[in-house]
Length: 486
Ligand code: NDP
View 1 (cartoon, rainbow, N blue to C red):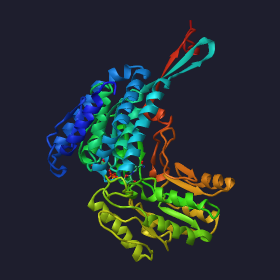
View 2 (view 1 turned 60 degrees about the vertical axis):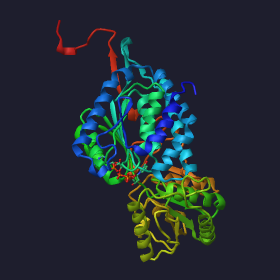
View 3 (view 1 turned 45 degrees about the vertical axis):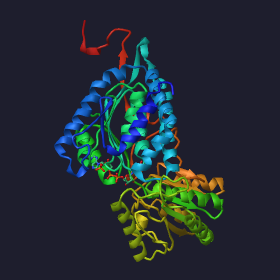
View 4 (view 1 turned 180 degrees about the vertical axis):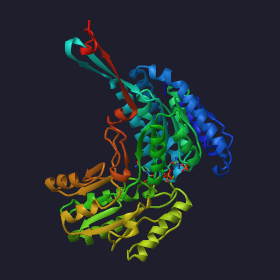
């Protein structure tokens, strides 16, 4: 490592993480007044003060950070990428401790954090304005300016990745940031703070405040926060949007889903089975874009289901730190009980399946499902795949779109025309053809309908994290028309 600093800091972070949760304000870990107490006893007033302090820190850092050139900012993000890659194992283990997801998945998640920092580090110098020639030699210059202080709020399923997807583009474009992680996964956002500081990002550019919804709510209403970027549930997203409306703030929302995965009779079956596992059982099913409504053509339904059930039985549930574990633990007991509740209601409504439970939940494949079941209509956010049999293309498109959500979807077929025809009919922000749950940083991600507003990733976020300032330059005399008589 060039600086040597990142590794030491991160190793210390790894050792100390258990003692958290910590805030990260002004370039250092802070011992919040509630540091070692459970969140339940945190005084709301204290939480508000901590949000205020973090926003002040971000506001103070804004002029210096936004005046750096895009290339200078980009170099620091690239250095942060390098530190993450060099410490990938330690950070992945922190993520496992916090989430219960298996270590092999955490390595993929943390690798994608490095990718996002690399991508936006590279993009930063390319964010430039426009020159617009006008009549008589006059012209306009359109500058791309940062929005100011961004408030980010995240869910618990991909703690560091969710944070980096927001922070990397925001910082690349000259904004500063205050992030509130989920109370259930407070650790790796702070680690990101230490990575950014080690990479030369100035103190105060990125800050973390811990707390429950109250802290997030205060952040959303803070008058000095110009933009809100939220990942979480639909009801909370609606509250965040309302807070944004009150303060005329730009809002990006990444919310839930109930996505269709459609397998036609001519699909390459093994790929469709593998993708169905990826679309349902990653991160214990706690993935917003999961293809939990698995539509299978009647002619292959029996074979497909048998092979899927056999592949599901082969998954190894257990200690998330163990190299051979494929499925880890549900985030917390209350959520595990919620997932089990959906399984019970599915059984009452006629579904058939392996319904074993516990905090380590066995992934479930439900057959005999129909479109009106609770488990088919609502987001379970657990390892529950519902198989729905269909007969025609028209029928499956209609049923696939019969949902309030619109985050993702997939089509499995060898027929190129049908693949595109059906994909174009799916009302969702992402449709995979012959694959599932891939999110390269270069590609925009986000939802239609109740699944969200705006997009993350790709170059589309340039609009989300900047505003334009137009300079009109008059090269001739002012033409006031009849208003001015010589
Ligand atoms: P929640 O909506 O309950 O919480 C998300 C975040 O919002 C948490 O940090 C929470 O704090 C905070 N929060 C709670 N109340 C408020 C408020 N009034 N104002 C501001 N912030 C608030 O979602 P979960 O954490 O339970 O995450 C699961 C949900 O997230 C699922 O529905 C899933 O679909 C969605 N999700 C969407 C993704 C996407 O990209 N589309 C990706 C991942 C998840 P705290 O919990 O600490 O109280």
